[in-house]
Image (cartoon, rainbow, N blue to C red):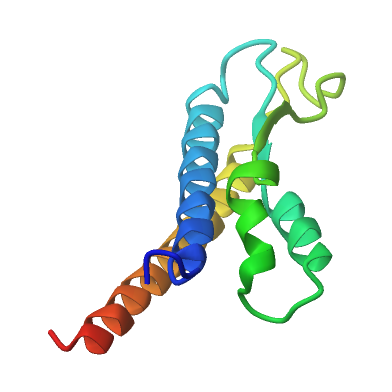
Length: 130
């Protein structure tokens, strides 16, 4: 089992959970700075990177080709969203309503990853008979 790819799915999911948690932190920071003049919202690009790299494997599901995703290409990038745009006089571009919706959405995504990891652990427990 050590030489197998049994944990690849969990490793990819772990990386996704880290990025999701980081995005929730960024969104919470955006909400906290909603009234800070000249503050520009920040976000993280992970989902697009993940989907693009997953398509490159050309295999449905998790296979050995996914292993390169774990360390090589799944590096989320933090960026400043619309850094030259602001609809407010104070040059802040944070919309608290939008941020709260994004936070709720990301929280659900994180919970989905947590459920997936828990189910995978249950599968391993079943396989070893405990």
